[in-house]
Image 1 (tube, helix red, strand yellow):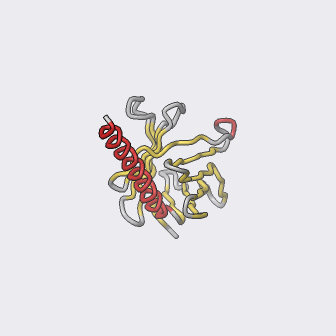
Image 2 (image 1 turned 180 degrees about the vertical axis):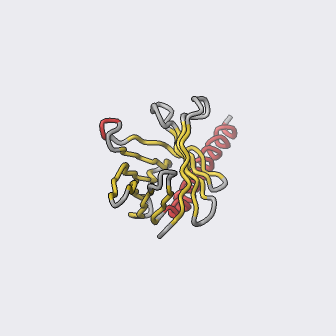
Image 3 (image 1 turned 120 degrees about the vertical axis):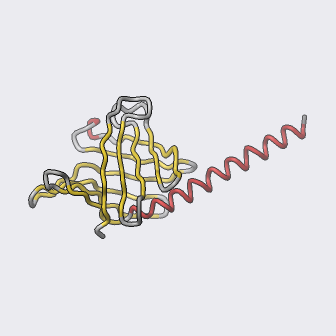
Length: 159
């Protein structure tokens, strides 16, 4: 019985250490977000994100759009690694009473980072997929079991 308990305890410790290492590596890979990313809409406007690395465990973002000569901030994001979690914390102007909404990283495979909050109305998922070192395909959707509601963003790094 003692051997089983000892083996189980060692397995749990190794699993926890492995998860922490994976999150550290995943967060370091997200440093690639640093910079300014834009996409042009069909209407000729520009949508963008400007990411800044604050420290080894914190990136911040301002989402914006440019229409003519006007630049409007639409969202701020905090990307934080805390303990064994990575959270994408979004505050969207004029939504959710201007309160932040957290999405937890649930997958980080093949240069694709999936953040989920299944209790949120929309989006339930936020995904960033690095397609090259200068391009990102990002999207938001209603979750795998939700309606086929999805918005895609094809960003190119400009600086």
